[in-house]
Image (cartoon, rainbow, N blue to C red):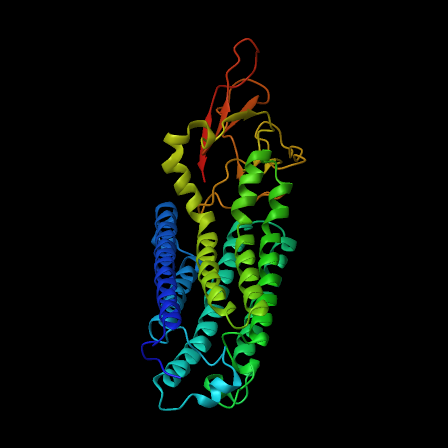
Length: 409
């Protein structure tokens, strides 16, 4: 066997087809990588604009840790085709293994390709799980001020993510013993030591991804549907927060291709692995860049993306975003809490990213201009800025003069 120029037309055509396939893969891979980095830059810009760089939280840095691993993974994926010519220690018959001389250039390429595959699986795990950690930290910010039972779900998520990461890495480093068999050509090291198609690695990675992705999706969705957002906004928020399902689809397809076709499936699996990484980067950053996109496209989309403005009757004291139940300035008693919190606009900036569910996170009080009379009659206008307005009803004796208190989040 030789890596030289093929002598027959069939081999020549196969080589040209392989070169064309690699060229197409390289274009797709680097295009997706560029978009992923751009999306992360947009997220960082949106966060800096919303809260300032000094107020960045852990997830704002974790996404860039993910980008470092994404860069490494994209480089390794390119190197499999550009350096190793798509070869590794898998996809060979016993006769081909016997015939391949250690002095043949193909032998060296297969060893290099096998080592790249091991590094690729390791980098893939680090990339995906750093993004999962970033999502969990974001959920902590999203639920600040809520009860312990909401935080407990997130803490369980941290334990699940860490445990599955160790399982995925453990499968890579423990499935093949001794470790150097990962790049052994002859004798056949067996499936466990062929990293590109290793069943222990594939199954461990798939199971870890399925369990963590489903759990991460299920953390915010119940909170969202318990809120009093309009149905359309609930659906939009569900799509944004549940976009991780697309990562799950890519991971499933990648695993199926390898398990069904161990010989040729590795190439398709590599392509879907690249798409999986891209979708993971985008979906992790999407909740943070949505407000920025909403602002940019508002002039084009008009009322579709415009924040709704409505007036609700509610007690004078109220839970911000979360409905009635604060201190009443007109009476020394607590107003009745609303059955469902009022959730204003779907945004995920530092001050607007909290989910309220029957919890008093902040209270706005109307500071009265004392007049001659009774309690206030109030209306709340909910938009990007909360305004508590007291109107002067001159036809009703004893009511107070108007006042206005602003709180922006």
